[in-house]
Amino acid sequence: MSERLRNLVTVVVLATMATALVLLVATSPNDADRAEAIGTRIKCPVCQGESIANSPSQMARDMMALVSERVEAGADDQAIVDELLASYSGAVLLDPPASGATLVLWLAPLAAVAAGAGVIFWWRRHPSEEKPASVEPESERSRTRRLTPLLILSGAFAVIVVVAGFFLQDRDGPAAGVADLAGQDLEDVSNETMEAVITANAEHPEVDGMRLALAERYYEEGDFSSAFPHYLAVAESLNATEPQAVTALIRLGWMAWEGNGEAETAIDLLDQALSIDPASDTARYLKAQVLWCGAEDGDAAAQLLEEVLTDPGLEEDVRRFVDADLEAIRSGETCA
Image 1 (cartoon, rainbow, N blue to C red):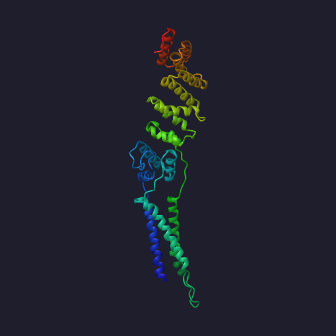
Image 2: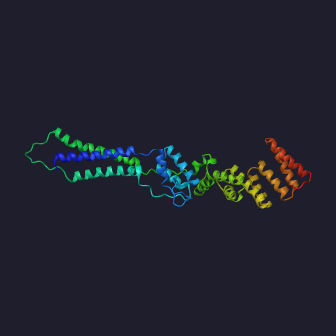
């Protein structure tokens, strides 16, 4: 091959690689584009074949909000995907879209690397023909001029490889999942999203706090059947804190009485709460209610109410309420 043609090939390859590098940098998606691209890769857990980016469900909106938050925080795409798959039961990876900026982002560095590798391979298979011995060795300047295109080509190839590696490497990150969500304001998280996170992280040491928050939400709504399994899980958890366990046992005890009229079970559960925290005014008051209304043991109920009234930190409106119940028991009134 002539020197002119060789230099022409070098220039063409360099131009191709430079163009690929410019496209790679210019088409790097912004935060909104990244969040959208990630969302189209994840199947909505409660939808029929839809991605979370296209689904109108509350869970999908919650998941997309989490994606946007992670993107704005600078998290790696793969780490965000891993977190979603680990945190939401039923979420699976869809085939990644191959269009628009995403297609260029993936193909540009690969094409550039392939072109550079092809040129180097060809160059090694077609070395320059040896010159006759009668020809004088070329000057240092001539050799430098001949080597310059190859040096430039090698440098450009190295830059492409580094940049492509930065964008395409698989950087694994831990899936924080429940720990991150537990640190957020759960008022903005739907019941179904919390259920999915809890299901996917049932053994996570921090899941008890989320369980309790969700159970309290169900309890306040009067949905005892949904609250019960979460309270029970917290009560039986080895990772639950004492206040969490006491709250769960108190709620279980009161639901046993108020929901099913099971006085004996309710008293047993409330006693378990008092064994952990003997000073719990709530446990003592509710046990007094069950003793008075369910076991018809007014004397035991009155004794517990008197203990509650000894608490100097008792709020005045609560104190008046307990005083009224105590007076009713002493007067021989039946539980209303």
